[in-house]
Length: 157
Image (cartoon, rainbow, N blue to C red):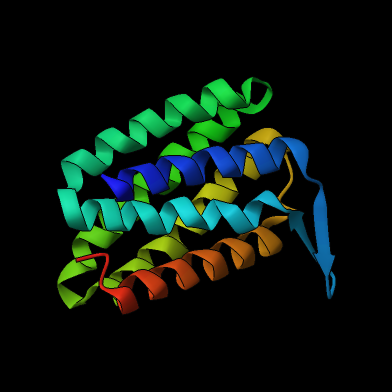
């Protein structure tokens, strides 16, 4: 159950960062600081699925959507819609690629999930995709690092 707990803590931390932290800029790319944490749920969701199966992962995604809606009511719809779309697509891609190995499946599914999550969230919340490059970079980097650590420590098996 540690994977489920890590997943839910990552969701809470991401929401906290979005509510309380500002925007970062580097080499002309900008995004909310929360984008760095937003990749963590993508990676931990893969670990939950690997350990407990896709049905448990889907249930945990729904619980996390509820937490997201509760923690950030001002952006609840954008946040929950983006989270649900990104996580369910991550689950679908990971399921399709899992036989090719955890690391490949995790990085590919997290990248797809990060792009979709960012597109949906930015479109609904701000009506602009100005932060898209920064959000995708931050999410892919953070989720790839966590996936690599999970793979190297074999905690995902």
